[in-house]
Structures are given as structure tokens and as C-alpha cells.
Image (cartoon, rainbow, N blue to C red; front, side, top):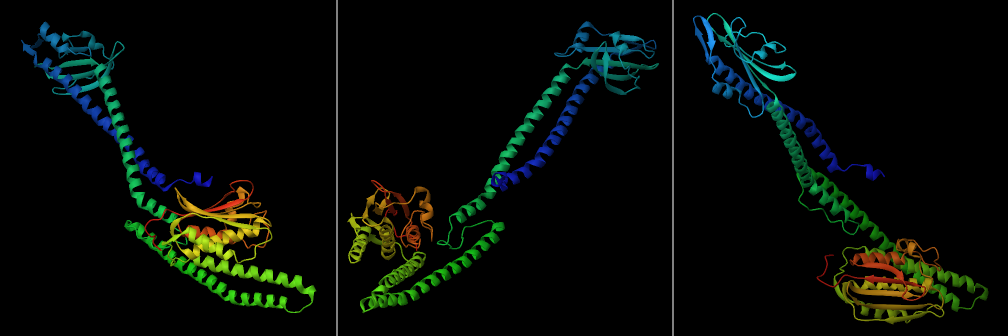
Length: 462
């Protein structure tokens, strides 16, 4: 739940980038709208003023009194407009109507008379209709004549709506474009960090080589910190492997000697009542020797200096293991068989023999008396494979993943195992770039441990 609620860095950067845009763009759009609207209104007002100036130019002084004559043709020209109704009125110095629509004298609010050359623009009402008015003062000799030109607001309203729509549309488009550009830029900027995360995701104790990718300057300290961490982890892992190898090596010799002494004691004359005790001691020593060998194998499996790119054949490894097991005492009734085919691969022969040794030992130890164990190898479409199958109780599917962890055993496991065999086999498989699977037996109850290696190709780097 916390992971779902935690926002990503990309979304956080995108949010902080969009916040000022979402605030600034509407304000800029409103300012642009006002400027364009003002320019359009000014242009239309100037058109009204031009009409008023045309009318003012027609005023003539005769006998000291102003006169104006407008022909029918000129009247139609002055009133012509595709969208609005145009009205005009010329008043004498004393407010008398000289020409035009006398009804304009009823405008509300009534405009104040303008001085010579003065022009007034405003919104007025005439009989319930909204009009835009331009009023001009003109010298009439004995006074100042007033020229009024008004028109309805249809084209102004249409122009206002069109300007608002265009500003909104362009603002929305610009917002979307900036959002896409910002998201793309953030993703491109975050790509090195994403690549670094992907690289770190594939790192483990077997791959602690320094990060060498070319990163932006801000990420170089982070890369250096990881490389120093990898260096410390590599030293710690190497120290652990050396400890395991040294401890296992030091334990093997005294344990082997102790086992020999116990076997000699059992051959010497002694009280027969001590036989069960000596047998238990031998069993415990054998188990300890086996554990020391497994610890040594574990250290070797984790040693990165081991070359796992040698040309081998899984059939040869299985044959050598079979020859070794032929000289061992198997539990009563246990049948160990081999079904082998050519399986060329790349790997390390000793480690793969140890893997097979652990799989067979597990099958012998846990399958029980009278078990039938079969070792097979071959070559399939996915690559060379090796498997050990038994008809014992097996491991429940839900417990198989845990069974391949160190010191973990299945809930139904019997015997004296330490829980390291499958873990070592899984580590060796991983070291070779392959995988170890615990599957059901081909027929009936039991367990099938199957190793699949990559198709043989160029030798992998150690």
C-alpha cells in the first residue's frame, strides 16, 4: 500500500513543473485576451470615429448658421454594415437636430457635449438596445456642433467570443504541448537514473564489478558511492569464502582421522554393548565430514576466479559420478541407475560433479529404503540438462523454493541432512548461468531435480 501511495520522482518533478504553468498560462491568456480585445475595440471605435469625421466634414456654415446636406446615397453608405444597425445624429450648437436619427437624442445615459476636437466613446442604451457610441465635437462658427454615431454590438460580441475561443484553444494547446514536452524532457533527464537502477537491480554478491556507465555530473557521486559499497561487499564476501574454505579444509583432516579411529575401534575386541554407541559416533562424524565438504563446495561455488567456461560434457560428469557411487555402500534396497546421452556444455567439471553429488546424496538420504533413483542427462531445445529423479515422498510444491535456501529442509524431510545440498546445487547452477528446478517425478510420487544450462557458446567471462 505504501508503495502505491508513494509518488514517483518523475511525477513529482512533472507536478512541480506544471504547477507554475497552470497558474501562469491562464493569467497570460487573460492578459492576451484583454490586449487583443482592446485592440479590436479600438479598431472598431476608430471606424465609428471615421464615420463621425465624415459627417463633421459635411457641416457647412451659411449665413452664420450651420447646415448639412446628406444625399440618400451617402446616407446608405454611412449606414451600411453587414452585422450591425448604424445610427447617426448631427446636433447644432443649441441642440437642434441638423441631420440624422432624432431618436439618438433619447440616449441613456445622455452623453455630455464634447468640445471642439474632443471624442467620447461609451456604452449607451436606446429603447432597450445596447449601442456603442462615438461622439465628436465640431466647430460650427457660432458654437460647437455634436456629431453622434452609434451601432449595435453584434460584431463586437461575435469578435469577443471568437477572440476568447481562440485564446482558450491556443492556451489549451500550448499547455498540452508544454506538458508533453516537459514529460518527455523529464523522462530523458531521468533515463540515466533509470538505467542505473536497472543495472543495480541485476547486481548480487557474484557481480560486484564497478559501475562504469557514463552518467551526468550530478549522478557521478552516487555512482562512486555504489562502487565503494561494492568494493566493501566484495572484500567481505571474499573474507567469508576464505573463512568457509579454511574452516572446511581444517575440519576435514581431523574428522577423517576420527572416523578412521572409530572404524578401527569397532574392529578391535570390545564390549559388544558399545557397538550402538560406536555406530552413532561414526554416523555423526560422517555427517560432520559431509558438512565440511559442503562448506568447501559452497566456497568454491562462490569463487569468481573459477572458470565456468570450459568445454565439458554432462555425460562424462555423470559417468564419473556413477563410478564413484558404485564403490559406496547404498542403503538397503536402493537402486541407483543412469540413463545418459551426450550433453555438451560449458562449465566447471568439479563444480558440476559436486552439484550432481549433492543431488544424488539428497535422493539417497531422503527417498528412503528401497528407493529407485535415476540419473539422466541429454540435450534439449533450451540447452544441455541433467536431472536426478527418485520415487520417494518428494517435496510439496509450496516448499520447493524454500528447500533451495541454505539450512532449510522440507517439512516432511527425514534423515540427517544439513539443508545445504540443494542450496549448493542452486548456487552452482546460478554460477553457470543455468537454473535448478524441483519438479514432480515423471510417474507416481517422488521428486525430480533438473539442471538446465545455457546452450554452449563463447566462453563466459569469469
